[in-house]
Length: 196
Image 1: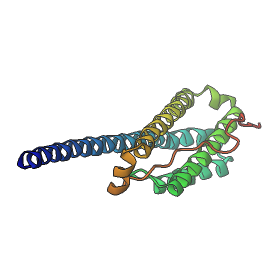
Image 2: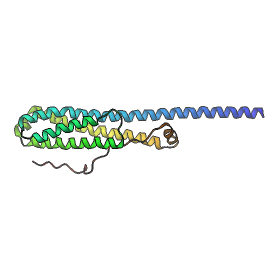
Image 3: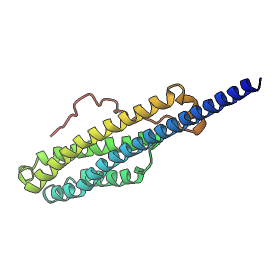
Image 4: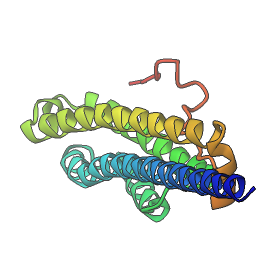
């Protein structure tokens, strides 16, 4: 009888140790995935910041050629300021993400209009500063697309991990909640219309 209690005690201790190791491993994995998601969100913000930093230079070059296009230039400046207000260093909630994304879509539309304005000025189109800024802006748009995809991949890995058994039990106890994806805007599959 004593021998049976001793074996039961050892088996229970082993079970507790294995459970503890599993919990520690699972928790550390969730923290790693959470931090990866935060890092990917930061990458998205960095690329949007890069675009926002290019805008004043682009606006100033265009101002010299198209001073009567004041409305487009002012709108772009206001949108740039709005995106700074929405920017944050933590992963946004679904509502905050929608507001941030809507502001970025408006910024893209304003930039498209600015490029369309430039098409009406042959001297501006040939200006080396404008061409260089336009090329940098195009490269930045590509970087933004890659950063958005990487963020969504990180969110997918995190959300999948917290929903799988047995992590789902642990994640709910530890307060891990699923994160929102960056969504494409309605009509994003259609090519933008640029009118001259």
